[in-house]
Length: 342
Image (cartoon, rainbow, N blue to C red; front, side):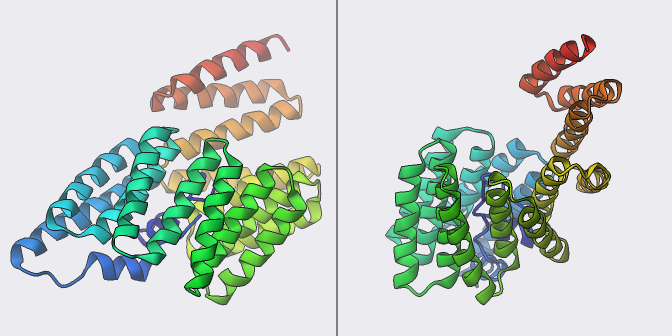
């Protein structure tokens, strides 16, 4: 899933996107909008405090501390509201909404994202409307409502075309590709992703390009086209590495792990998993480390090397307990019980 706030996170050495997670907010836009000349000294102090909270939230999100990120962003929104900075308030609602999406807190996410969209409409911010609609559409996809999501992305695309907003067109087309893929129409999805790539390359949007390439890799993988799958994920990985876009880098690695494993290239799979583990630890992201260890376990289980698989599942269980993830803890205990019988 493509996260709409990914460019913001990349600007602060973050990588979305989630999820669900497409990148939309440019670093230069954030800089301009979060550093407008203050009207007075009090405004400056207050505004600086809010901007700092937004940055802290981004740093916490990168480390997998989504609850803490939400706490910071809620504080920032309240400050922006008090000083009357609706544009910054709307942007922060974006980050907040997509964080709630990561937690599957859909009512809270929808409230935040629709508030963001309402602010964009009230202030006649057409670019904000494009991104707000794409975020709402992303949420609808997460809620398994692809047709409603498609209508929302189409509305965003119409505004982007009317405004000659190439970035918005690339984003909306990429998201429409997600809708096609969700409905099982992979050929249409591939065409939409290819159209999106044209716009993202035209404006020099490497983060958006890497994200769409990952989407395209997903579509090729679903059709069993491993050659194009590996080539497409590989291109996404190269771009993500060059731009330090950790979200798309991890996502490309995951796609390559699946594709190489399916093609029987197990040594390459292990190399990729080693890279993923190193990256997760560099980011100090315990959630990503957990996902990597679990992928190791699943890989060895698929090879029917059950002793090594059990070892990795046990490591994953310990991390799940550290994270306080009771759902994963229960699943892993059940998995280990099954493996003991093999």
